[in-house]
Length: 164
Picture (cartoon, rainbow, N blue to C red):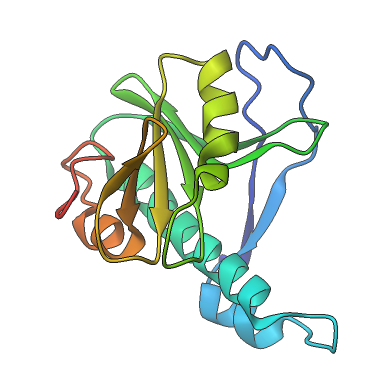
């Protein structure tokens, strides 16, 4: 029975000092939401953001497992705190994926992706957000998370999503 899983740190050809601990995800975003303690210092947006990230993690993990190609799923975080939620690496592609729980995208939202691209120019950056239209912000393709998840199929590349 799968209750939880760990997402390792992407360290391939690292040019910056990265953290050394894996991220921990429960098997289901709904279970995370029901188990997460809530108190006066917890904002609902923070809980919703972590749940959305967990939902995307579940879908990426399934996509990687069922794809015809072999992909590694990881995340990237420098010791200074710059983080990219997901790095998908394999012979058929290399993507950095950031998940934002917001209806709009600001230039600041793509800063971590641009930092990652500076170290890995071969990578295709992608920001997923709760909005309704696909846009490009500071060179980063930003698409609605709904369109991404609906279009994610094992027989397609990660970014061959409907509506993008």
